[in-house]
Amino acid sequence: MENKTKRLRIAIQKSGRLGIESVDLLKKSGFTFQKSERTLMAKCQNFPLDILFLRVGDIPNMIKEGVVDLGIIGENTLTEKNYSEVTTVEKLGFGKCTLCLAAPKKSNIKSVADFSGKMIATSYANITRKYLQNLGISCEIVEMSGSHEIAPQLGLADAICDIVSSGATLEANNLLNIEKIFTSQAVLVGKSNAKEILQEKNINDFLMRLHSVLRAKKLKSVIMNVPNRSIEKVSNVLSSMESPTIMPLAKEGWSALHSVIEEDNNFWKTITELKNNGACGILISPIERVLD
Ligand code: PRT
Image 1 (cartoon, rainbow, N blue to C red):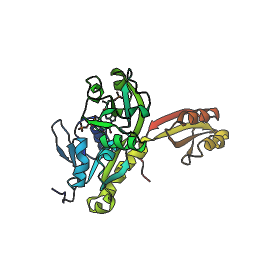
Image 2 (image 1 turned 30 degrees about the horizontal axis):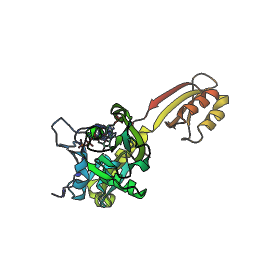
Image 3 (image 1 turned 135 degrees about the vertical axis):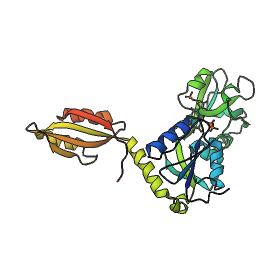
Image 4 (image 1 turned 45 degrees about the horizontal axis):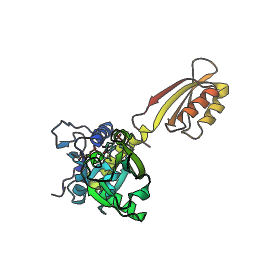
């Protein structure tokens, strides 16, 4: 059932944490569609785009078979499924998590070397096996599709390899996080040559809208009042960012400076420096979209 229509077809998670954020990203990117609990496919009303709602694990195969053109999944799923034809088109910056080896706190497994000869319950057999093989450690994999945390208590396995986000689930099940083996975030995936083969399906327009939202997420718009004598010093603080817009204020000897600042680990340090150099009345607002 290859998708031969001129409409771009994207698959996202039907329900779950990636599904919620994928719908949010598509809506913020300006694609209009209706989704209810039971919707399996939604037709976008203002762009030639169809959105399919599937289980995450089924999405790579749907792309491989050409049923859908693009998908949103975690890097963990992409690497585990390991279809050479399916690759990352764009990192999306949400759904961040790690895949970790963990063992009961009371067991004698305290380091990665202790996993030798042990039974490990996981849905990530390929990633786990490859990681341990690279360290020369052999183990037995017990494949489970969920509830791995309970496997040691039930005597099904000695340890687990599962996704960790806050660590609360491991803690609640008396498991110790021993080794982080893979870090993941949500990615837009498609065939390796997606950008070329999907030109007729408006992939460039689709990606431009997505990029504009992804870029804006990292930025803040900042407007401040500055005495004219301090404009140079304040501009120097902003020197690594966009060149500021300077507008005279009605109040004599003062100007308003507008710039865009990346919301990274240095964000509050930059704001403090602006204040220390004479800026006041600083307004910080979110940005919806950024286009070059
Ligand atoms: O339902 P479906 O078949 O579509 O897939 P699924 O069952 O894998 O869905 P879901 O929603 O659990 O996970 C989808 C994707 O979200 C994963 O493939 C990851 O890429 C990403 N992700 C991000 C997570 C987590 N964070 C996460 N915390 N996936 C699962 N978890 C689970 C984990 O399995 C464990 O049970 O949350 C628990 C641990 O969380 P903490 O916060 O207690 O550490």
